[in-house]
Length: 162
Image (tube, rainbow, N blue to C red; front, side, top):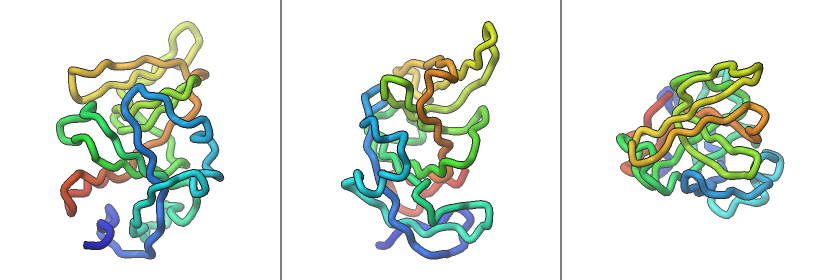
C-alpha cells in the first residue's frame, strides 16, 4: 500500500525512519539519547514521505518513530499506533511527547504543564486513558523530550497531523 502521506499533504522524498517500540514506563535502551546511532541500532524502519515545508529537517537522523505498545493514549491512539517525532522542535503544553527520564524509563504522554517549583522547572505529563498515571518530572531528570509531529493510527490513511 505504500507509506502514508505527509501531514501537510504535499509529497516529497521518502526517508527510512527508525522505529522503536515502547510500553509506557518501561526501560528503553540507553543509546536512545544519541540520535547519531539510531539508524545503526534500530531493527525496524518505516518509510515515510517527508514534508516539503522548509521548517522540517526530515532528511536528518533526528527523525524517530515510536510504536506505542499500550493503550495509555486511548482514545484515539490504540496499541500499535506510531508516533513520528523531530528532535529540534521544543514541546509546549498540549503536545504529545516522548519523554525519557534519567533511569531510561520512557512514556508517550501529553505534556500537560510546565511550572517552576522551588526554583526547579517541573513537567507534568498526562495519559488520555485514566487507567494510566500522570507523571511529574524535574527538567534535570529528563534525558530526552521529543515532540510528536505525526500520529499514524493502526488503520492506514488516518494520519493525524499535529
